[in-house]
Image (cartoon, rainbow over all chains, first blue to last red):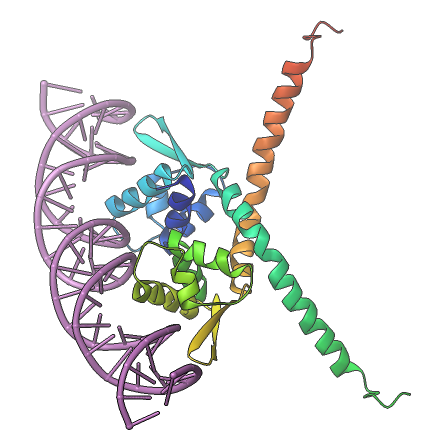
Length: 112
Length: 112
DNA sequence: AATATACGTAGGGAATATCCTACGTGTCAA
DNA sequence: TTGACACGTAGGATATTCCCTACGTATATT
């Protein structure tokens, strides 16, 4: 599949989104990351593999640890994919706002 | 799971991303949408169901057709989720730009 | 050298995803 | 009313996901 699909598929799992969120604070070891989840460490390793293959994280060996680092570039594709839709929800919000403004107006169409 | 997870999971399929893209041009019937894919119409219906349950599309019956309309609001959650990562790729791009600027600079560190 | 630590991978089981064909329902057209 | 059309759903086959435990490898410690 395309790289784009890899990224979206990687983000489909709440565990993997949580992992990327943890890496916002800087590189972490696998044990460190795994300690935040109820699941086994090997399972976390597998999630990290998915993220690695999507290009969302990189690993760097440090002694017997492996530090995983966030690589956010692939998220640009998501952001770019999102662009044409922004107009839609802004339009919708603008419409909502108009509606609320009318509602707030105590002078309900009594003006000439 | 959370609504957020529904949205990310819905977007994980290239077929469903393509469906939402088609709906950018306005509401369309199921047959119309299905004609853009190699798969059977019932399968497209199932994909539309996933999108519906994620709140990404709505349907409106019109005669014997059902017009599907894009509902982009749930994508705001994706956009919001993306926000803390933007800094990362901008930083990376800024670093890259610096590097290119230096490369372009014919006066390689010969200044006092 | 022997042991402990940090990690990845193998292999397997259960759940879910993704496609299909067959069929049922509601709507329009003749 | 009969037939065609548009669609959703049922049921099933296969692939993939997601979790586990067991195990192998490399590095550090003693």
